[in-house]
Length: 157
Image 1 (cartoon, rainbow, N blue to C red):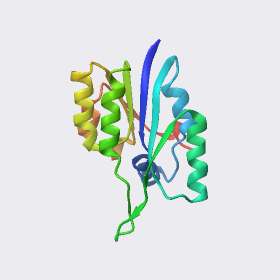
Image 2 (tube, one colour; image 1 turned 120 degrees about the vertical axis):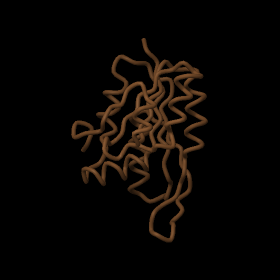
Image 3 (spheres, rainbow, N blue to C red; image 1 turned 180 degrees about the horizontal axis):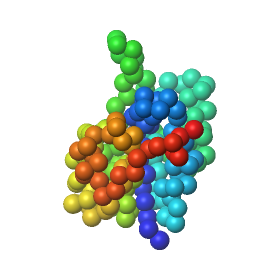
């Protein structure tokens, strides 16, 4: 059975699905699709922790699905946006889990991950699948993956 590691950039997916569709990502449907006939080695959701009740409930849902939830503290920028950059942490984990998996599934549209996808493919000999909102996913990331799966209405609440 094929093995997979799943790494979700929660902030990126939250904002891109909201911007493109005004809807939320359906983590349950995604999990069912991404893990079908596959063995999960590791599944991590990288998020910002504010400690409010709604967010804690969301994190508990992710845990119930099968994700480990990694949190960074919430930092409010002067422009109103939030900071909680997991890029380095996600990249380090991806390189580690790629050694244990046939496929690394990256759920993000962030073009900063294009080099990560290339490196996993060439140095770790693992396949890379990227899930992202097509019009808000960097072309460089799409081109660096073996497979790109667009997040569309079938993966939204």
